[in-house]
Length: 67
Image (cartoon, rainbow, N blue to C red):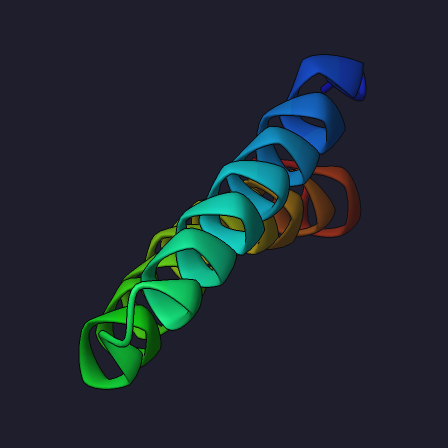
């Protein structure tokens, strides 16, 4: 399981985009929408991280249990 550096860039990109959208919505007076967008960004990133952690545990299981 080689480490995929693209995942780091994807997460950083999502963070930058969410931060920009949050700022624009906050400036436009749509604070509630800005919070929802931020929450959505966090959920997306957590889903991505969870899939990578799952892959990591599968690899650890394969290495130590020889499966």
